[in-house]
Amino acid sequence: MDKTAQTAQAAKDKAYQTAEAAKDKSVQAAQAAKETVTKTGQATKDKAGQTGQAARDTTSETADATKKKSQETSQVARDSAEAGKEKTGGFLSQTGEQVKSMAQGATDAVKNTFGFDGTGEGGKR
Image (cartoon, rainbow, N blue to C red; front, side, top):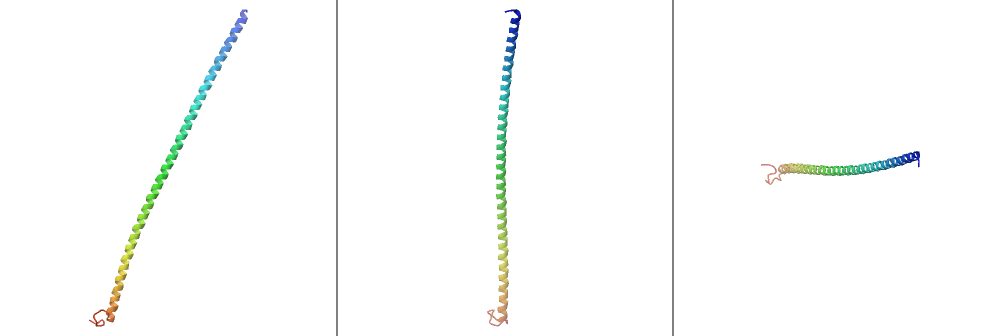
């Protein structure tokens, strides 16, 4: 083989090696990019799952707090109604006693006037 053919063959071999090295480097870069995208995607998925769980937890806690506050408010309303009922009952009882006393006084006055007071004098004393 002459010198030109050898040089051409050496250049061809060198070009082939360079192309193979570039190909290998490209494959490695693509694989690294793929791994990075996979890791980033998984991290995003994990973060979304955590955020969703946090939102569910917050919603549950808020619902529980609202339920508790509603129960407390209902209890206060029941207690207030019971206190009002007791006051009203006491007022009506007291008013009833006053009416009864007034009626008894009127009855006694009529008996006295018509002589039924037990003295037998017909209202005269």
